[in-house]
Length: 191
Image (spheres, rainbow, N blue to C red):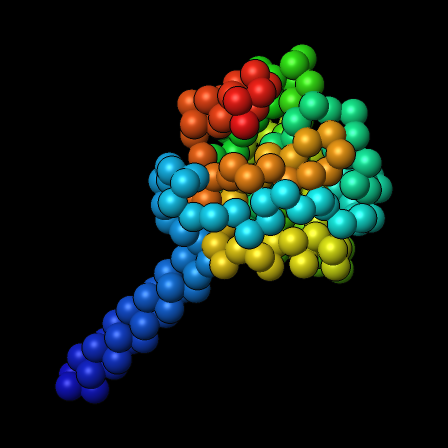
């Protein structure tokens, strides 16, 4: 009987350790921030241009930096499959995509933890579950170089038609209201 009780205690400790470890790794890199004032942090990519890249989206289509060319503004959201705030904001980004596409605004996701060599099953499931229709890119070397500028996800950048990254950005989870206010200011020329 003592061995059974001792075994149960050990098993509970092992399970507790596994749960805590899983939680810690699940949150690494993920800010957990809700909405963050973009003036809190400085955008390390402000006024830089996207380097040329050639990657694929989740549907297997080839995508290059030309994705920015035909839009006045592209919202670029860097996210990870392990990050719950990233996934929670995806419906907000879809609403932005739906409501601003006729004004020359696009939304593009960059999946920070999936490269061209990885399985896309997890990202496909997330995109399907959140009913996201905007383009989501797999990381190539140049996109990895870009995402490595941030020690957290999600991050939302604003990119003009020439691929220039604007100074304003949203570190942490974005909301529809936050993003629409920024977009309206940019489209009016206030940023």
